[in-house]
Image (cartoon, rainbow, N blue to C red; front, side):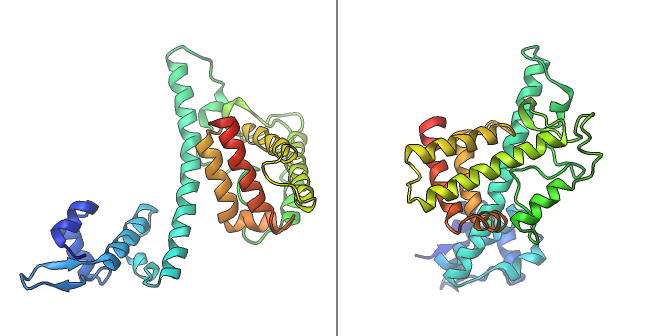
Length: 271
């Protein structure tokens, strides 16, 4: 089915002038010009426009968008999956920001106390150490990352003073030992899940769900997830290449196994 330029502008929210600019820049050419000399778009062009809007949504400049646009279904799927990962990351970040905002509003209303370090939970802080629920760098393996954690700047993990970084919900790792203890907990969880896979257990089995419960408790040390956020995090573990790299270091099926277990846990305990 063909849609006129006015139709496409109405359904997409993109102005006629913007559509004209996309055509001038070669980003979005019409399917054909009708006998009425109007411009028409068909499904491929509508999908391409969606790609453009996704690229703009994640902050790409227009001059960067052209090389990102692909016409083959396989390439389009790959690009869309990347957009999805980026948006999930933003959603998780915004979730933490919303929690901080809600706590501050509640404090200003006199409904609850607010510790000073909670004021900045959720904000991007380049000075803090990497949180345990963040993906490891591209170049680092699981073992490299563990070693990195053990050799962090001693000033950040001085056992006699609070750590400079903070976590949501009033949870603060005060010492290097606290941080390494948390790392040991999640490593133990991953190893137990690896063992469950090797034993042939299902993600929904009581034994595996008990392990997933420990994972949920570990996440709660950082922020309080809703069912939707926990499911999104589960998908991120599978779709983000850095998470996959880490989980593959335990077992090639661990990312999907953990995701499936988290989906069940979200439905049973968080919904």
